[in-house]
Image 1 (cartoon, rainbow, N blue to C red):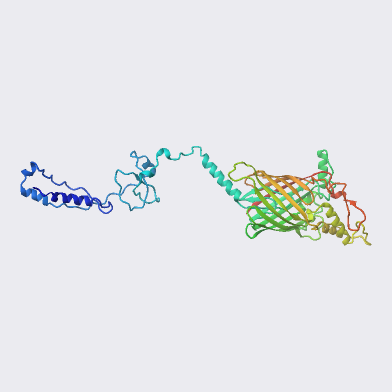
Image 2: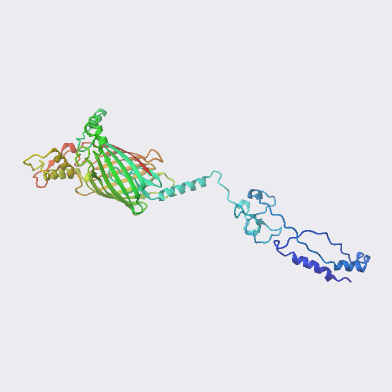
Length: 485
């Protein structure tokens, strides 16, 4: 009778050893053991010694050379395997799976080696359940457009002297004569040229029926203004500063018989400088205050340095009419500016009364006052200039509707009259604005027929001088160019 325990024991050892981790033990095949005798026939044909020697033979185990590293297989190559295996990249600590299990592999890093791990059956994704790509890329395009639109519309609003800057892109003016509340970010330089076909003070501005009549009016009463402005700071943080400079010599040379009235030895003739400060309290809300034409560099020049000194304080608010998810390009923003101002922002009748008072104070003849000695021409002009500057505070306001990106409708109350027009940015990525306007729309004291008391104590009302009146709406055009440095 053969002792079966001698035969079973080695197989039991092999069975136990086979459960070791593949990382700990590696095996290679050796010569097969001699065939064991069966209980019938072969057992009786061998001698007892041969059987005993065979049973007593000890199995010898040898450590094999390490298995070769698995080759790195690209995801595309793996996906084409016909056996349908799934792969996933994991940290190299798990045991090798059984051949019957599904396997997954992904890349952990560009330079790491693939490692294998089991994937539970319930986590497998059927091919028909995978999301299908949009062959027309419509979803991707819409997502990108929404991201750009959201970034641009959520960005804070900054500004030049009149235009707007948001997300490093320029937007047209939201006012004409009225300063807006927005200020600079970084350094901003802008130049502005404004022309009016009839200027109050050079009038009267008479109606015309032909183009020749209008040309004649231009030659007599037109006027132009040129500005060079510098802005710096950050309105959203500590604030922004504007330095505005007007140069009347350019427009003066056009209407002064080939420029003979301009003294070429006086480079600062007709140059005036204003200072302004702006501060935001939110991405869409900002305030600005300042004095236009504060400094007159040639104090004896009353011909070209005739820009009125204005104090003002305004606030501007942007109203977002559509959310970024709305793809409509029409009517996306509305802007409202409101504040106070004087100087050029006071009614024409107040300017007339202030000038009359200044003439009397200077000893020049005026309503109800005749001096013993006539005043000089210089004193007379200085008095008119003094009466025009500053004075009574008046409300001012402007409203602007963005019809489409690059085109704004503008309406404003200058404290003197109603103006309306539009501002157009012809080039998407360029800060060039063209702003045509219609001025003096309301028939108030800028038109003939208005009478006022010229000075306190004068017994009757008088009509305003014809030179400060118009009998029609006036046309103006502004062209500005701004650059952010």
